[in-house]
Length: 102
Image 1 (tube, rainbow, N blue to C red):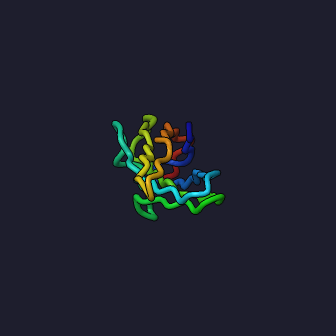
Image 2: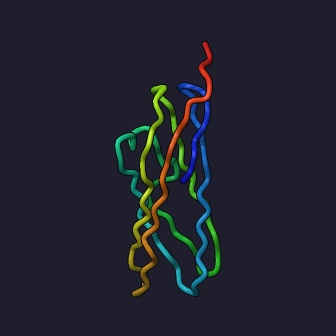
């Protein structure tokens, strides 16, 4: 679970670090799904490429519009590259508004 905590109408950015232990390049298609998926975004786009034996980070942004907690799921679905498939990854995204600024 990745938790986004901040003020109402503030934008919070979290990084998700992905590692590729294999000797082949991995590619993922990132999708945000769920009740509040529209409040979350991937500013660098929906395609993630991880070089062999390397790691990369993807930014996930959340902007709160309501006081109630928001929930969504980040799905990373592997694209076949040279016959290599990575595992599908899922991350639960949750938010909490801690304060309101006038």
